Length: 366
Image (cartoon, rainbow, N blue to C red; front, side, top):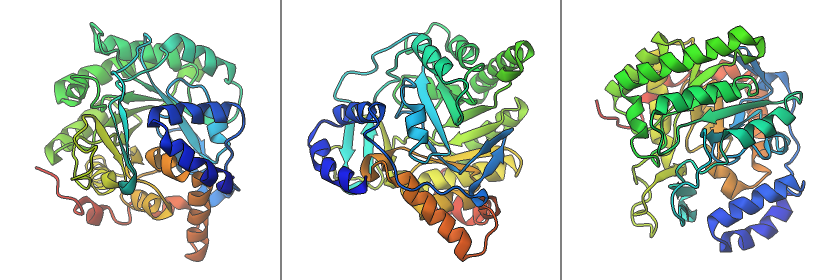
């Protein structure tokens, strides 16, 4: 499969990036995209928030926006897959073009704007796979024109709590105007109060609806904002945080012809910033709350770095664009080799080893 992808990649990269993405979804549906040998070993297993993950590597939201191919993606080797972002009503998102490759940087810029099919179609698809194995989370958001964005998130809980392994409340996309304002203390407290109440209400009706709730935050935060978000997350008893989304910064891609494009930057240039923010959240939250590290992960070393910075689990997305369907198995086999070589009994033994160092590795504003 590695050879097949290498042969296909030049043709894919001559296409517009969004068209290539759509073709990759079709290839997965047809069973044409397959990964490499997937390691199965208890040293890779992670247990958090009542869930047991076969390995710590997940696929972030944004790739399978409409919950079309979660099981095909799990077969590539991912320990979990997050679908969405899903909004109550279907929406087209921002005008095209809205996705730009920065190939030499291993990065992309996107300004999609929560383009998705809406709750109804995704609910139907997830209901069809309800009895299948594998951890599939649902990332929920608000419609751009929502009169009450909090109500949209509550509707997301009602739609997906009975069907998803976990829910991620996404307040971190830079591509929906005003969405990141929900990270401010007062707004976030109100949002999480209603979301957790809705989840608990669903759980009272059905035990299967007692799903963990994670909060996805931006990387463009100050130390003060990190402390405030952490305080609110603990107050409202969310199960964990996803740190982080794309950045508005263009550090590391200056001079690229697409650097001026509006939207969020992801990929290798985000690694240092996202890892530092993750480590600051671990310091602010303490050892108990679950953290999923995202941003700039492209190989085994960058996955290990995220864990050492405080992550229980790690997600990728942009690296899959450049690495292809064999990337998950390559990362995981490298991780297992690292554990064996260093006689480490479990991946969780690596967590928090470099929190202080990595928190200070990228300068954040106070």
